[in-house]
Length: 452
Image 1 (cartoon, rainbow, N blue to C red):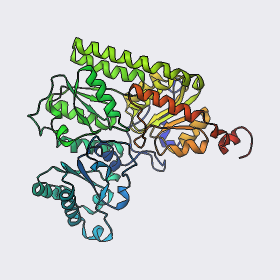
Image 2: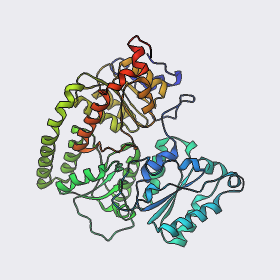
Image 3: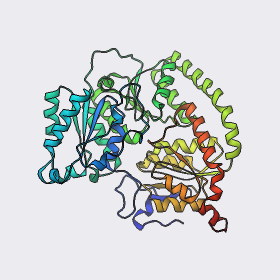
Image 4: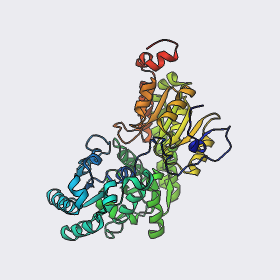
């Protein structure tokens, strides 16, 4: 058994052997070197894809490192979201305050770029020195005539999930601004889809073919104007439940919009996401269009998976991702490729999420919450995984152990959602797992009894 800190033992279980409920939704154990990101990072994940807004980080320059090519969120128009602006606070502002610098930066950026809105992100240092970013934002909003929204995302005050909530609070300020433009009675908002590698465009096209209008995607390829009229859609479809369920609940309470949870990854979950929307509208034409769409896409997809499945049959995979909804879909998608998931976990899963993982995973599968590199590498080696699916922080773990890796996080440039995304996923997994380079990896050589 991999080494586990005493305080984390109830956050790891072996499916079918351990009968306790997995502990989750708690702060990371001190000293565990958690793979989780901070509050600030969580807020940026949700808000940064809004393409016609200025995103200004009020803090040291190091917090602004998440810029042009480090995230795959694409835009069909403006690309302000790909610029990372910072007030670059230094010793002088830490001592005397940074509000004057923030005001000057906001005024300069809005004058230069004429955005539809501006977001100001509070970082750790702002929480310590006490800058009143709300007051500065309100002053600039009055002077410039656009929404200027303070995002309270001081990194030290919680986890990435708290950052999601801060982002949802910021988005709530934009809702309700447009009560005039036309919205179809058969309309939805997509929440928690960030247009990585153009995935929003794939999903929106599916709904268009069904006969359903997408009022707003929050926040993939988003515009401030679309978010302002999102409160008039008939249904919210929540893709990343960890990041935007809070917003969906707020919209249900304030505007009466129901919501459903979906995933756009893998064959089963992608199909279910379309059928669930069709059932909600209870329209025969939409049902027929949905059935025809799924049938057409599967006829193109399934033959293409067969060659990959031949080589991948019986291989083992480990999955560690941010949101548990992706973990569910990965287990199912890997099964379609003939692969067994032997380790699976997430950074932000809920008790209900992990109960569902227990249902769909085979006995013996290690299920974990808020893992750290030592645990991950230990379980991957113990279970003999041939592949690790994760994000940029998990990539070095896979490569050091000499196994394949599939990037399923925000840095990727390959669309993995939708039916065509499933084919891309199969191709990427196949290329990585079957690469001959792994036989030269020192960890593999040692495992085979030789020397590197």
